[in-house]
Amino acid sequence: MQFVERNGIRAPAIGLGTYPMVGENCYRAVLWALEAGYRHIDTAQLYGNETDVGHALADSGVPRGEIFLTTKCGVFDATPEAVMAELDDSLAKLRTDYVDLWMFHWPSRTVPMDETLGAMAGARTDGRAKSLGVGNFTIPLMHEAVEVHESDLFTNQFESHPLLRQPRVEQAAHDLGITVTAHSPLGRGKVPGNPVLEGIGRKYGKSAVQVAIRWQLDKPDTMLVPKSTRRDGIVENLDVFDFTLDDDDRAAIEGLPNNQRGSDPSFGPAWDPV
Image (tube, rainbow, N blue to C red):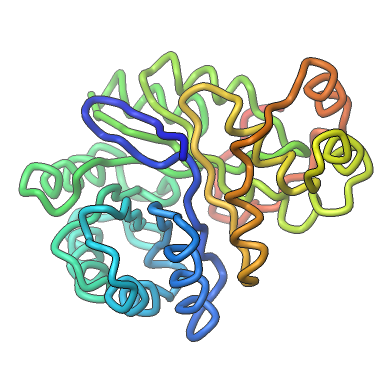
């Protein structure tokens, strides 16, 4: 396994993404992932599956201290009172006293950022969140969080895959001391079958999916949370540590279209140009 480290926080670079799985599908996927060797699980209040994740964690037999657990808050109400209530609810559903990473899921248009991040910092102080992060923050929003509000952020999770490459956002995060987490790293179904990625994969005996995951892992201070509902898919997504891409591979990926954004809700921010 590859790890990302910052300020004493050490996270496996590959985690299991759980959106939009719920119920038995989510429960089985988390169990299969932990059996396969995953130790990083990513969920959120918005996903409606924290109870399923918590059930699987409890049944897995894997000690809680070996698992890097992420959840998220604040999509529809980012007031301090609301996010703290969400954290209490998340911890109860996940059957744990703390999460390793608690993220402000989407920037709010109605609540000042410092109010939300300030409340979240209190949860880190009292030990219920070991680290804090943000999701879907643009370059200006990251600068505001760090430079204006002095937030200590472990990561910014945003959409990134070979068909939506965001090097400017990645560089801005690193310049501010923030790691990157790629969500939707398989392009919401656009990566499998892509002829360029399939061609690269044939060089190494790998799939297009594994090439896309390796492309992320070759970047510095970068994590990703691919999702699969299939046991063999979960195993495949982790089988990426026996090869790396060369300059020709990366050049071919850079030649792909770069406008395939799959996550663009009405409440999202004004995205940085790609």
